[in-house]
Image 1 (cartoon, rainbow, N blue to C red):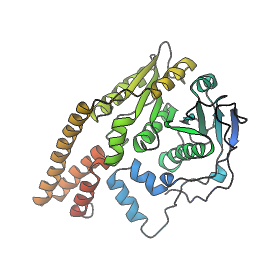
Image 2: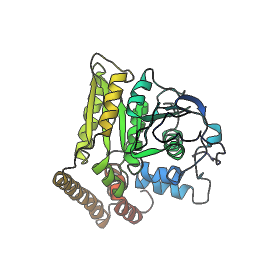
Image 3: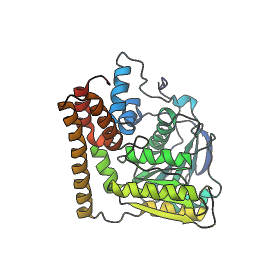
Length: 342
């Protein structure tokens, strides 16, 4: 159960003057934010991150109340923020970083890459691998993004999420569920395939936006053989789900380590690149998925028509994990037909 949260009361420093040096530039520790967007509400996070069947279970379990509107109490949270020396003419970029460790810190040397790219870095305290993904790590990243965009002049096309190792895997889920807020992800030595129970697809409109406009950059050391292999699986799944805006930045002679300054610089530049979308390729890919989904859902219907609820539930659960939000209306209707879990 997500924890009950209260509204915050403290604010960020004022935004800097256009085109000049920021009085708040450099690294700030123990920053406290104040504001909550609608998209960080508990039910909205669940809608975007969890599957339709999981959302139905949550709604039924909390029908009498008890689910907090927000899972985070910002008054109790601290963030590290790095602001570049100068602001780009179109506004700063943002990189919300999700670490595997517990303390909010700027990776060594990254300041120069952020200065060069004009990207504000923000990282929450107590958002490491031991914390709840949906109860803390994802909401903290979303709240960090929102409060930075409210406090500084930001280029909305350069709002990114990133992470290292386990944090990178969470960052990928944030980018997948929030393409209307997050334009890309820097995945440093950690990734997963999408379209399964661990990285479910969001509702169709959000998936369409992710397919057509999101940038995913993989940054992994060549000696980190496990994550190199997992990156290949993740990129293969991205391609299978019509996500073609991916790029790889390999670090030679590096193992399972945080991205080097030069790799970070290249990754941020890769996130900014927006190659044109091949509309024909995207349409054909989407048509293939729609056909496969219709076939799989029809199998559920046929099992129900034949009076086989156990088989229907098994097939529905499989479709829920694979298509998730993409098949939201159909899965909801079929779940109602199946009734309580056999």
